[in-house]
Length: 157
Figure 1: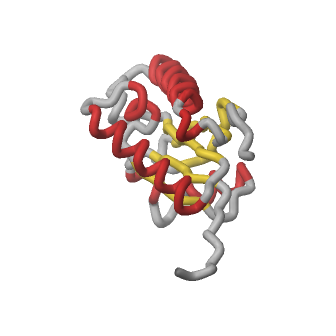
Figure 2: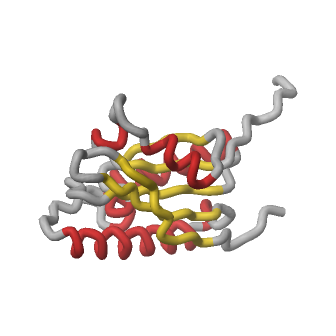
């Protein structure tokens, strides 16, 4: 057994798998999140639809897998925040053609996911940050917009 201190990082960030978030020749979503939130180090998790995967998963195993990854990040790296990043401009998990309805669905599901996570005793100590990656008509991420923040339900003792 070693006396090594655990590697502590600020947050885990959950992104959609959409290719537009990870283009080589454009601002990457992870860098934008780090800049907007002032996060230096973070675990990166990926799930199609992000908030929808938590509140309306096509298969229950998808939600359970994502929750397991969040919990593992918390155990291994002692995160104190979780950032959920949906994206606009035709998220395939939502399958909507109407940008206004898609925006409403993202915001509603992000809010539901945040509450769901806060009510889960495993994550009650985490600050939950809800965000939307804004993708322009050229399929480039132009900014990360924070649309909500939930403080931890419990303080670490």
